[in-house]
Image (tube, rainbow, N blue to C red; front, side, top):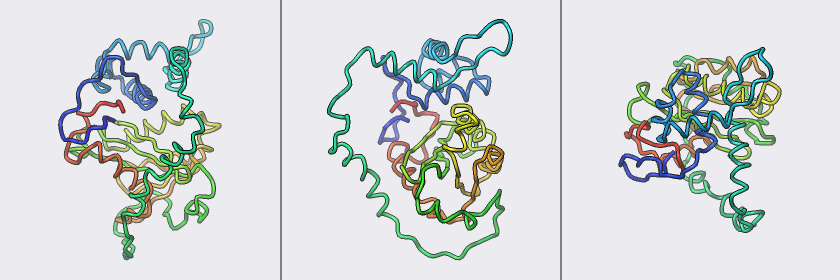
Length: 272
């Protein structure tokens, strides 16, 4: 998303600006939603030719005359991009294994981690739960002993449910953060995005990368438990207990520095 600290409309994509992996995931999502090349280009704030060449770059060749035509694959597109990119510039040696750079990156979200004080609240069960309660989640997940356990949420711009939102996931041990622009704050949009991620990792690795996902009880996550069919454990936090997904909340507040509340996310480009 654009790193724009004001409420002004984000300028158009600059000439020569490259697509990110998140853009490529969005392309696959909008292709599944039957968007035209021009419509996808409008969403990503680039030219239709950029989308056309990216789809060619990320689509494999058909073997023989039988079987389905291959679909666009974001990972293939990213891999081909990185190969091409590696041939046109030198890698910065200062960034490879530099202790100072590692030290700067690690405490990036430390102020956010210290910002909130947890207040004890009574558990309220007057809101519908869409699956297994967080109370049944193994303690090992909270202890952050192993990788593969995620928290999920959505970041809304101006009008919830009527325009694009950002689907965010953060891995609890590594703080790896995924932000994907989806068409709306609804279960269908969330599941299409998760289906794209599943196709990217494949059934063999999807449940290893996403061992568990913890969500709130928003209606957009009402179908999330369907992922349990692929070996992913799904847990739902208590209503109004946002601190039970503290890492995702902190990362979303960082994202809010660039996406101001009350401003339409449709006005933001996908570029960093």
